[in-house]
Image (tube, rainbow, N blue to C red; front, side):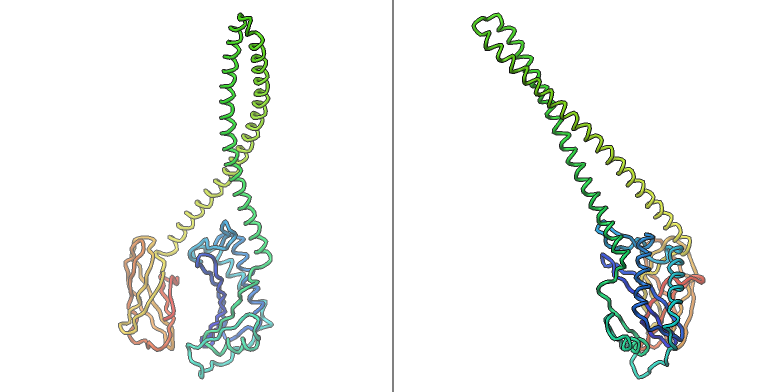
Length: 361
């Protein structure tokens, strides 16, 4: 929670994999809420909804939650749905609302308090309206039952996919082995025929007749055994080919899904480029010179009018025409050198009526 005069912000930050985070925030004017467990449920259910929809969050191959969109505002339809959901769910907390008491000027602005989700509710409520920042930490049971179920399904499907791939490799090895055995059998048949020819030649030699007959019988018996082996191997090859066909069907389905994802990604980049010319990555403010510097990623080469605003005890504003270059770059805009470096100000960068970046310095 963040208390700022008559405003109080309720922000939920969820840690994802690979050092990623996602945050959701609701701001109220002149009122505060007291049911923190219900607020946690609202935010956690919304995280589940984001993962299920798969536009902003998704599961990776290990069943961990990762970000699919680098910035929330790049997917306006999903952001609008999340916003409406938050507004409707927080409206249901009407019976837990209380008037926001006056600001306590006896507490420094930079002071904060941290609680665990199981701590006394009255202590948390009192701190949330008295201190500039109040944190409630929840380190377990933050996945809903539905999310845990989805995670298990994803992990199981990925394991089945890996097992199927391993089976396919084993089948290929077995197929190669059968082909090798078939070639060896052909050699055996050739040798058997050669022995048969020798037997016919030896037929005319009376002394070796019995030996020749025995060798010929052995050769015929070997051929019969090999024929049975070939039939068995041919049956195995048929089964292998059927399994390979099924695997190819599955791989084609996966390829089509991947192509659809790539198509959606291209559509997303085009939509973002139509919304704004660049994305602000970070900002810094020089209180001595009055210049606000910002790092950005340009989506196209253009010149736009950028407006900068700062809000503290007083409001400051200025605008300037700035050349934007495609790619990663930095730029700055003058605001005012009259800001007090001992105070905190909220800075906003706007193009037209759209806020495209900002920070607190």
